[in-house]
Image (tube, rainbow, N blue to C red; front, side, top):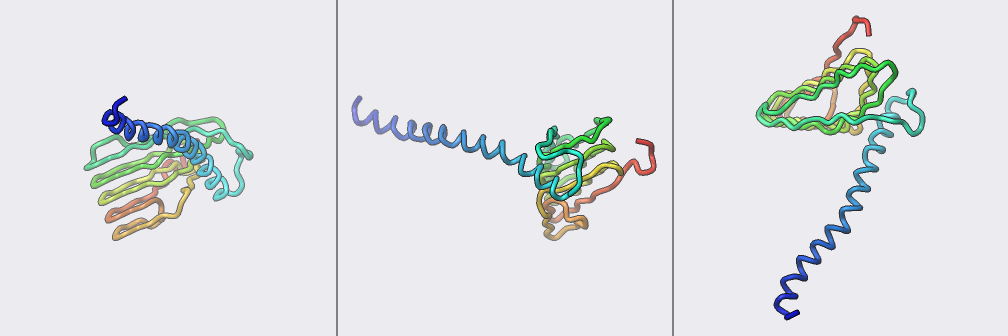
Length: 165
């Protein structure tokens, strides 16, 4: 192979090899991350019904920009306590809602990011909610200190109180 061709192929091959080396590390870090999030929530709750290696499901949240996008709703009501990991929600310059309506839900929220907008987190009165990290508020209103709020407001509201579950 001529030197000129090799010099064009070599950088691309090195980038591809580097990317291949990073993919397993990234996949491993992602697979370990939810477990550490679950562990943080279980520790925050103290006493819980899930044991040391609990099964859980993951609730994906959405990204909303200027109010465009879908809200996140968990309406699945279970007969037994259910552990649910909630992936990060992002709201930029609009309104957003996350509804966690299972009265037997133990909701573990990784974080929320709210920039110049309003975010409401509605949690069933009998459900549990824990956040895996401390919150941060900059020029906004976030009295429960849930997630990251910049020039906006994040509010947690209990719903379904007094109703049979």
